[in-house]
Image 1 (cartoon, rainbow, N blue to C red):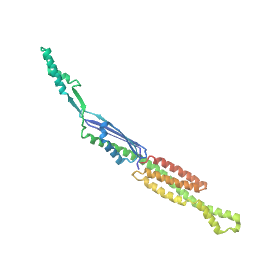
Image 2: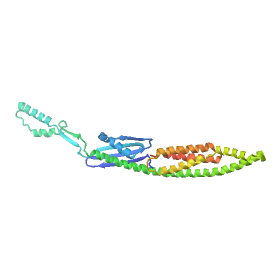
Image 3: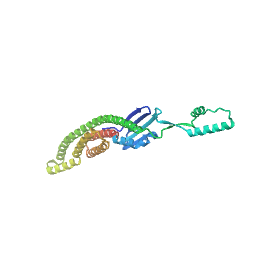
Image 4: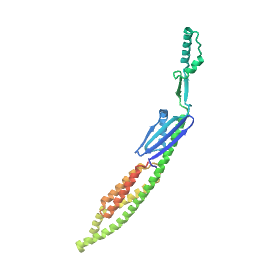
Length: 294
């Protein structure tokens, strides 16, 4: 069993990139993936989503991807030699006409021009490093593994709590079944005594048994108890599964609640009413825990 709440973080650093990925997940009826990442990662969005879908089945998943440059490996220098040549030629031509005695040193002027951003430009490489995509997906994959491990750990805690609740519920079902047997026997004896007091020796045994059977049938909860026993067995089975069981658990608790409500509506003894209240309380606690189960 896994929870839908979890957190995972993974980082990578080399001479070119520092890649940081953080993933957190919370309750959500379906899988909802929200990505926060720089534009450099956009080409890999579909691959990232597919990686998440392969591991995470439900929950709102928010992933934060940041990229920092740690060196100059992804930069390139562009010198606009055409502009430099054009400038130097025009300067030299003008000097030769108007200032023939002036000494012109092209090398010195080139050194000055190289410090001018109009002639020398440092830009990001237009094509990303071919290893960039591989690195991104690997870091994301490891972050997903961490958040999945976190969800599994949290799910184990939920499983322990729900196991305790289910054991308490089983004890109540057993108590209720035992009480019903005693109650039916006692009810029959009291019913016979009361009729004898009213009618004396004129009681028709066949009619007595018929009336008693009708009354008991109206309040018969054996079928509900049998179905509850089956549901509890299924609950125990689901609690020990690793695959997503949240939706199935939610449906199962609804069915169990329905049986308990039927028992409450059929039964008049205060003892049964009290047990029904305790059952409904436990089922509500289990339902609250299920809201966070994947």
